[in-house]
Image (cartoon, rainbow, N blue to C red; front, side):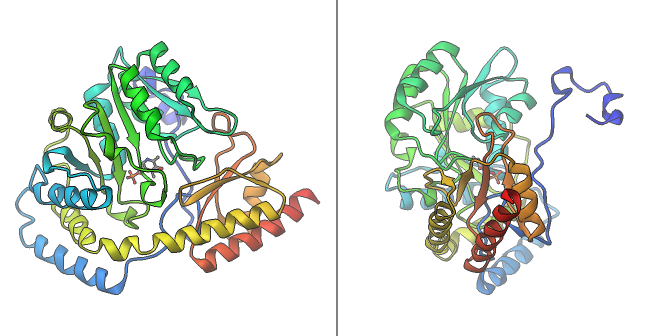
Length: 369
Ligand SMILES: *Cc1c(COP(=O)(O)O)cnc(C)c1O
C-alpha cells in the first residue's frame, strides 16, 4: 500500500491488499493475458463503426437497462453452441465477466458469508470476494492441478460456502473439471455454484450449460474477451435460472451496459463464425508450444485452454525477464498458491509463437549458464 493510500480511511479489510495488475507493455509481443491474438477483420471493423455511429445518434437517451436485444442474441448464440435451448430470461450480461462475477458476489455473498475456490485458480475470484466483504476459502488442488470429486465435495461440506467457484478450463493451469464434479458439488452445497467458463470455446470437455435445466443454483459464466477476440469491448455474460437473473437486477447499477457496448457486442455476435474461426489456429499454435517446450526438457501442464503453464524453474522471475529482454511478455504466476516455479504463456499468431519459442530457447541458455 502506498503511503498516500495508507493515510486515508480506507476499509480495514482492504488494507494491505494489492490490485489486479498484469503488466501492459505495448512494445512487447503480449502473451500474458490470454487474449486472442487475431485482430477483427476489416469487414467487422466497418460493421462496428456503422453500428456505433447509428447508436451515437441517440446517445442523449439512456440505453436499454435490460439489454433485451443483446441478451436475446447471447441466448441464441449459446443455444446454438451448446445444443441446449436457452431463454433470454436465463441470460445476463455486464462489462466483462468480471462485472458479472462481482454482481454474483454482491447478490449472493457479503458479510458473514464465504466464497470458496480451488487454487491455484483465477486471482480475481478472491479479489471480487474481498471487494464485496465476502470471506474467502482457498482449497488446494492436487499436485497435478486437477480437482477430484471427493476433494471438491468434502471442501463444500466443510466450509458451507455461499458461492463455490469452479473454473474450467482453469486459469492459470489449463486443466479441466468434469460435469460429474459440477453436479456433485451442486448436490453437496446449499449455495450458488459458479462455473467460470471463460475458455470454454477452446475446450473439448463439455460445457456445464447442459446441466442448467437440472441444477437451479448453477451459474455458468462466459466472456467475449478470450476465444471471441473482443477483450477491448468488455462484454461478459452468464446463463442461469431466471431467478438468478432477478437477483442480479437487485445489485446492478442502472444502465450498467452502455448503448455502445450493447451494439458492439451484438455486431460481433453477428460475426461469430468469423471470430471463432481463429480458435483452431490458436489451438494449433498452442499445441506447437506444448510440443516444443517439452522438447526443451521442461514440463507443460495438460491444457484445454489457449494458454499453458510451463516450468518449473528455480528462477522463474529471471526466465520471465530474459523473455522480456527478447521482446516477449509472458505471465509470472509463480507467487500464486501452489505455483512456485511456474510461468504461463498464451498462444499467439504463428509468428508470435515462433518468436516466443526462439526467445525461450535463448532465455534458458542464459539462465542455466
Ligand atoms: C480472462 C478471464 C475472465 C474474463 O474476464 P473479462 O472480465 O470477461 O474480460 C474470467 N474468468 C477467468 C477465469 C479468466 O481467465
